[in-house]
Length: 198
Ligand code: 0O2
Image 1: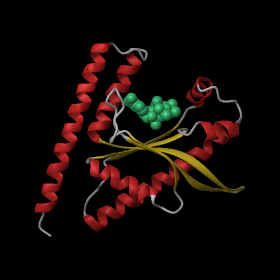
Image 2: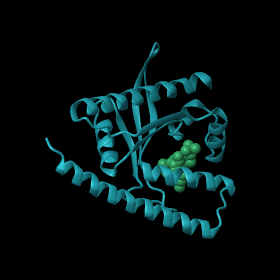
Image 3: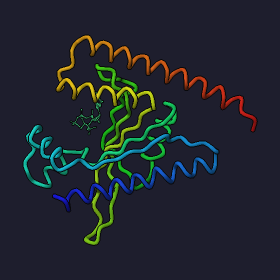
Image 4: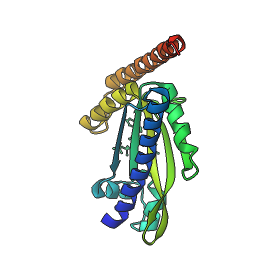
């Protein structure tokens, strides 16, 4: 299992390097950093086994590889929604990055208010035995979306996944407020960019 998970660690490193190159190039060319924060994790063996059993996947490495696509996960937090889509485009159009699925929960938020842009991509990792295509789940979101998601995650687990109706409604309201804030910040951002002396 450790050896199997190591491939995912390498996949994360490849994506992480791509993101840091994009960030550094942006800073150099435009004096602007489109990425606020990047965090990544490989699912722990315990959490992977819990998910395998919950989804009824066979305890077989090939079955796990094809059925569980978020073993490697990386989260990219941007200040503005436009940067979320820009980073998504810049990463996913690279020749060695293959997009498997995209879920745009910004264009179509989840019922609880959750917003983020998710992509499952594969990236080649060159091992001594040859190349392997490693799936990585990349989540792109703004600071406001991230703030909401981290609180909602805590509440969800605090109530053992049975959140009271009143809290659900308040969370939906908070998500709408976060979306309004993102829209306002985006407007300010483009006004400032338009006014900046060249
Ligand atoms: P963790 O601890 O962050 O890894 P699946 O991944 O197949 O079980 P699904 O719905 O097909 O589920 O995947 P989806 O919608 O792409 O969401 C996967 C991940 O997105 C979750 O991973 C969360 O990180 C995040 N996410 C999705 N919905 C919500 C939500 O309503 N609230 C919050 N806070 N995060 C969400 P994990 O494995 O659940 O958790």
